[in-house]
Image: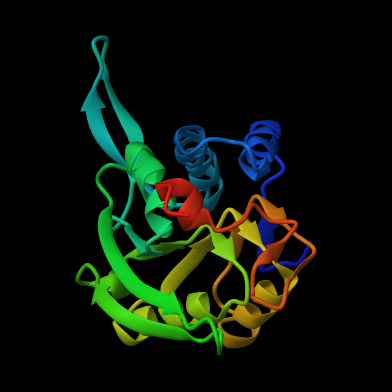
Length: 210
């Protein structure tokens, strides 16, 4: 394992991922599992959030108790497939601010093309977690992070369901300061830029558009 890459080995994560990989898993089940696995991955990516304390009253007595410090974090979804991870994470972190980066991959060049960008203010004062199920070529992910840095983001983490070595290398080259959290590092990408063995197109499987 590399220092910029964390692979979440939790048994529930690996079990749910196996079901998601199976080609006969239905859209409804795939969507539900993505929501569930995103919460488990969110636990890992937020593990070192800064804490402060505040004085509260329990039914028994007054105490000084830990609470999150700083501004509310920002969850940034790379459209459209990122929304599957976003939904589950928002159940765990309902107060998070939310943004969207719209990128699609040119099927001939495999390069990202931007079509939408809307993010929270004060990104420079927030922890920013970028979510996209698949880190394949890494081109779209690197482009999204670059846009966020231009918008002021300084503390960025990237969360994905699956990663390919090519995508991890591309992200490390472009953004060595951005740690990656994933459920699995697969073998490679094919000529079309899909992860192998992978699970197919996450967006198509989530929305039933194949």
